[in-house]
Image (tube, rainbow, N blue to C red):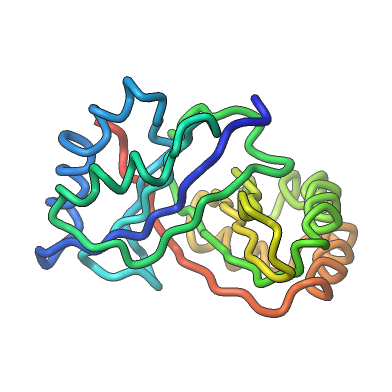
Length: 206
């Protein structure tokens, strides 16, 4: 993966009761014009819990030479939605390329409040933990991405972890990971100030 790749997490709220009209507009009218400018769809998700019934999560990728958020938001300004939350992000240990996620299932987005100076250590602890976390027999889970803020000049910031599960049962079972992973997660917890999580389902690309 190029070191210049950036990602944008956008939580969007539509004007209708449900998320489908917004997702269709984003797929058909918002994203296609951006593709020629180097903006790709990493994934789009509807809420399971923590996300409104008329909201979606959209993650896009682009090269840093492009003003990613400006280009995206210029198109979103024409969409029937409001931006509830948005973060420009840089990948750490995952993803290793910008190929879109395609596997059906449950995706949990977890934001961590961190010191930006600790981003490298948090990424290292996470990668080490995943060697046993994602090979456990009690559940099926695979971290898809661990991101920091693209601009880390401030003392405090956020990190975003996106993890795939085959369902809620696996998510619940993964709360008791193998001992090796649990120890790394404990050490990671000590480096964070708080978390918030959104549970979502992947919206298939058209």
